[in-house]
Structures are given as C-alpha cells and as structure tokens.
Amino acid sequence: MKKVVKKIITAGLFTLISTIACAATLDKIAAVVNDNAITQSQLNQQLNLYRQQLQFSHAPMPAPAALRKQALQHIIDTQLQVQLAQKEGITVDDASVTQAITRIAQQNGLTLTQLQAKVSQQGMDYNKYRAEIKKQMLISELQQREVAPHVKISEQEVTDFLRQNGKHLLATPSTQAPSSQAALYHVRDILIPLPDAATPQQTADTLQQAKTILAKIRAGGNINVESSDLGWRTFNDLPDIFEPVVKNMQPGALSDPIKAPNGYHIVQLLGIKANTANAQAPAAMPTYTTHARHILIKTNPLMPDDEVKFRLMRIRDAILHGASFAQLAKENSQDPGSASKGGDLGWVNPGMLDPTFEKTMNGLKPGEISQPFKSAFGWHIVQVVERKSVANNQNFLRNQARAILYQRKFSEALQNWLQQLRSQSYIKIMDNN
Image (cartoon, rainbow, N blue to C red; front, top):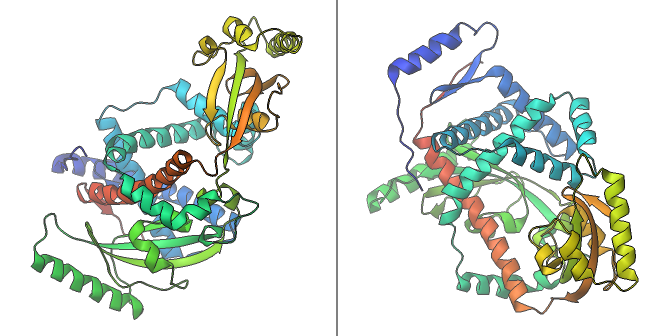
C-alpha cells in the first residue's frame, strides 16, 4: 500500500478554522479532517439516512450518542478516502457515472427517467445523487488499488473452505437447510492497535490495556476507544478471526480480546436478525451455468427504439426460418466482444451479466430464441445454446469458494487499511454537545 504522508500545516489549519468560524452561527463544525471540515448539516443528513435504513430493516435503534458516532465515523472515512483518491489522481468520468446509475435503475426494474423521478420524490436533488454515486465509484477505485492487491487466497485455503462448507455451496435455495447464512449479524469491532514490529513487552502491555477496557465496558463505563461498526453481515462475511467467537455469542455480549496482526480486537454482537435476502447469499448460489449467444443493436438519433426492435424481430424471424445466427450476429451485432465470434458469450455463471439480460436468458429453454428486449446496453435477442448443472464441477466450486474467501479477506483488510489511514491523518472532532 502506498504510504499516506500525514502533513499538518499549522498556518493552513488555522486559516481553515478561522474561515469556518465565520459560518459557525449558520452551520457548526462537527469535525476537521486534514484540511477539510465536516459540518453539522452533513452529519445530520447522514444521521437521517442511518435512521431510515434502520427503520426499513426493522433493526433496533442505537442510543443517539452511538448513532452519532457511527455516522460521523462514516463521513470521516469517506472524506479521508476521497482526499487520498484526489491526491493520487484517480478520476471517474461522467459517462461511467451515467452507466452505473443506469445499471442501478435496471436492477430496480426502473428506467433512468423513473429513477430520476424516484430520487426527486425522496427529496434529493438528482445532481447531488449523481455526485454521491461518483464519490462511491471513486472510493471503490481507490480501494481496488490500495487494498485489493494485498488480498491473497491460497489453494490450501480454498481446499480447507470446501472441506468445511462444500455442502452449502452444492445446495440450491429451494433445498438448502437453514444455517448461519439464514441470519445476519450486527457486529461492532473495538481495536486496541499494536505498534509495527511490536516487542513481546508491547504485546503484553496492549493485551492488558484491552482487558482493562473490556472490564470497564462490561461494568457500564463510558470508554473513549476507536471502534468500527461492521454493519449487518452473514456469518461467512465476518472476518475469519471473529467467526468462532460470534458463533457462540448472544446479542449484547462482548468477546474476550482476540489477537490479530494489527492488535487486539474486542467484538460486540449488537444484534441478530433473519436474512430476508438469503436466496442471494453465497451459501445459496445457483448450481448451473449457461452457454448463450446474442445480437445487440443500440439506439441512436437515426434509429429509435421502435425501429431497432423491428429490425431485431426481422433478424429473429430469419433465424427461425433457417438463417445462420452466427452469420447474422457478425453482420449486425454491435457488441464488440462477441460479434466477431457470432454473438457467442461462452459459458456464463449466474450474476455475471446485466440483470435484465440474465433474467430473460434464464427464462429460455436450450435452443430457444428470445423476443427482442432492452437492457442497459441496448436491444438484444438471445439464444440459450446449452445449460448444464455444475453441482459436481470442482472448478466451479473452487471459484465460488475463492470468491467468498476473497470477500471476507477484503473486508478485513479494508478495515485495517482504514484504521491505518486514520492514524496517519489529522482528525479533530468538535464538542458541540
């Protein structure tokens, strides 16, 4: 990971505080992050969002002070990452933002116009919504550069995971027995960090500090320590070192200190609830793969939707009367990745394609050709060449296991990286109570 250099320019900091002090009567400052301020109105917006999310999920509402701390920490982490991304010259162009928002609309069964209307109905300016999506994409790109290269999965780890969880990967949503994936766990992580290359004495001192903090928290004391809200996660999405501990905990309980390379962790289980999206959980992955081919035609000012749809209907009719799908795809398809291959997409696993495209494809029998339909990329016709079960395909299972392990390790590495980013930055939290 590239080193983040912490620079506190005293004169610049005083200038910032002097500038924002003039507006203090209008909008108090909640925190200063390096040379940027977080205003009370920004914090209030995040608090309102958190409350809406908790109410929607029927989750217990934390105490006001705890919720405020979570919201402020989220904004701080966001600002730190945006600042670093800008410093490293990472950019996201407007076309990519539009494409991402179009995908979001498709995934929710909406057109782009309908999504814009829905954003307005919820009281949010659409330009601010675009800016927020762009910020998320910027942060995602940064994390892929800074964190992802350090996440390594060995073949032995994959083998060990399959030995313990292989039956869950082989199960389908309709046949899988209830398991830990049927629940979501809300976990708080309190980290007492170890210095780099800690000596045995430093390790012992840190452990004692962790035990002292734990004792005070259990006694009801208010301890000012760094903590991270990991949010609601399936059991398999928890960091590896937390799993055996959380498995036997009751809501509200605190774990004993857990040793990790970056320090000692104290885990608090804040709650458990049913996973209503369990059909999409890793343990319930579909066990089939599809060989498909398609023809894509995009609209333009000279070729509106109706004309493109009619053109694809004529192509489909020609194929049904004996014309070569592959040849017509080479002549007509505007998909640069598959047109030269006769529209062939190869074998695709669930979740790899645009949701609208995949839904249409999954509704077809082998050999069947769809009616023309529209996705985020344009208008298509698709044919399922073949579909087969992969329940006993070891390569498929290992790839699925590797994906689950990667997500878990990435999540853990991300938390460690954020902790390091905070420690190397100037953060001042104002007391506005």
